[in-house]
View (cartoon, rainbow, N blue to C red):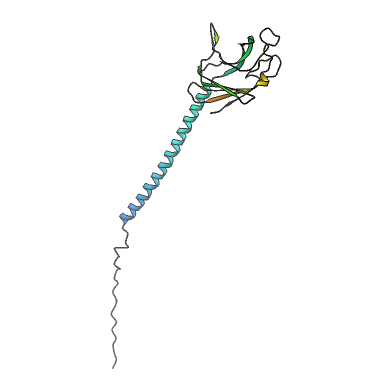
Length: 207
């Protein structure tokens, strides 16, 4: 007897999504939005940093330009002073302002060859020459030096070079932006004064 085998057809059933692993379109959009927002914030932070750095650089450039514009120019020279040996037989370092801008916080050190250092200071030297009494000259006596005096052919001849190593002047502009240094060494050239920042000195900006 023939045996009929009936095979039941399996219906096409759509898979049921797993709620734990299924990501909705809204969730994808939210994730993309969060990513874009974070990227935008990062880009904004970078531009803010660059803008701040550019602003600081601009401020520094403006301050530097101002420092250059108001730089005082000081002249260091020598004047005769009286000593126990007679009138005009000693010397002093003389400082005057030959520019159009004030110099402030002035410090002058006279450094002797025996290692001794004398220090003097002054708050301010105004610029230029007064119409009636000339320049405002700051004088600082040099100790232990004797020179020939005003009646001699070379009034400044003496033992300055043997006694003094250098005179060092530091000063700032009126705003205190920059600071400068003059290091003046005694001259041995006949006919010149012992200290003259035009011929025997090193000048530099120190701040």
